[in-house]
Length: 275
Image (tube, rainbow, N blue to C red; front, side):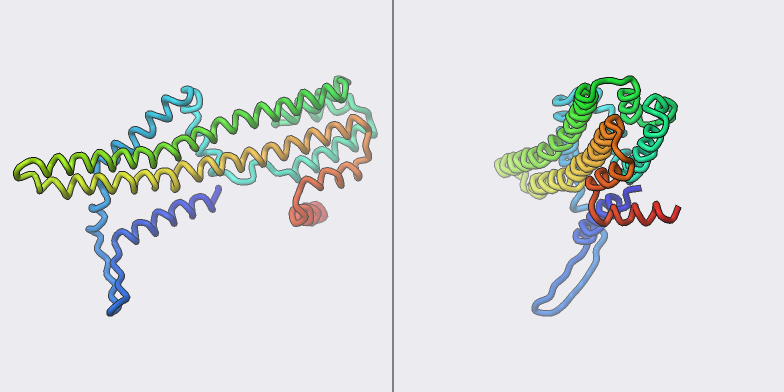
């Protein structure tokens, strides 16, 4: 579970709500009070309709239905941690290198069928089938590029929502100001000024919250998951290329460890030594 995301989102919302209900004065004398009823000042149905409704419909108009259906999957992805562990792949590749040196590349077919990662299985089978090295690398790198493009499209959907939400916040502000000015021309309509002005300001607030508390973090986390997956697949590509070339398993491990930060390498060595 991605605790950082949950803590960050809940914490930001909690601080925001606390600020809404809190009154703090320092000068000329210190005073502190909490009024929960203030929360109702920040609720406006028209603002919710304009900001959230229009944002969702514009996103729906900008992207294909298949991407919209994948939104629950996207939230599932960002809530998970350690889906892609580079050290796990390095250890498997070193084991495959040892098997290949002893029994040949054909002996890796059984190991390939045990893989749950389709990309890893494909990479092993390509060298088992004795394909040319350049061809194997081209196929695998093209797979990575296409995957990266798909992931970027998904993140772009949330970028779009993040940019559209504040825009419709400003639209709501204009709507509120127009209604306020119209009310000033109507006899006895001054009582509507407060509500119209509230809508004008609250829509901007809702737009900022949606952009920076919801959509922005999702786009950033999706890109982070993509980077993790790309790293692991790059390790797989380099690993299977080295295995096909008959590289020494120890030298292979040292080379693949360069893809990881020094601290992660030391943690991996410690874990491996204890097993």
